[in-house]
Length: 95
Image (cartoon, rainbow, N blue to C red; front, side, top):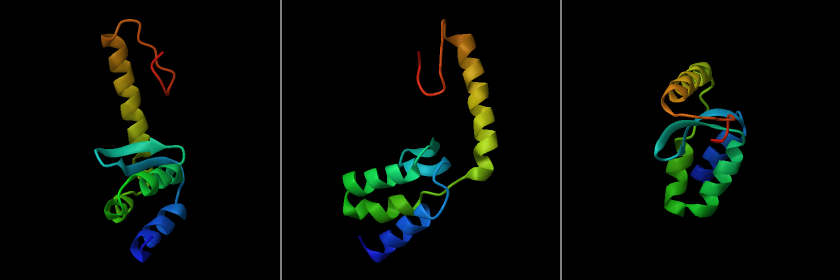
């Protein structure tokens, strides 16, 4: 691990471990995580060394957006219930 990647790893490890984060996946601006270090481990194991610094550099906790994110998700869920017959969601999976 390069010193730059180590610095980003340490920054993430020393911050919040759960909640809303930016760019846990490169195609998604933000998403919730129950264990950000699990995702960091996946990046370091599965992605090329050339991607490590960029990916870790872009991951930041977004606690100030969590309430709005939760409200938007609730609003979307209510909308989907009006459009999808027999829709059921347990908070993690379609039932």
